Length: 74
Image (cartoon, rainbow, N blue to C red; front, side, top):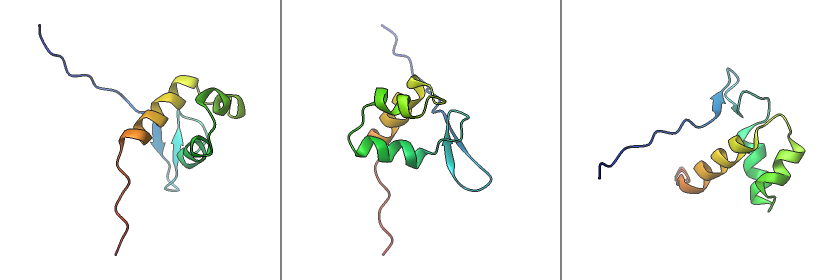
């Protein structure tokens, strides 16, 4: 069986103001991550921010969960 690489596009855009927004909306990455950290489910987040597709919310949360946090500056 042939193994294939999978490429996923994460629905995030860096604005000119340096803020990362999700899925072409005005909703920021920080907003979604904060809601997830506070215990909200992706479905609850989607209800609060209907301009962001549920699939985009899942993709952003999955990326957040598997990406190591940057080391603090010393």
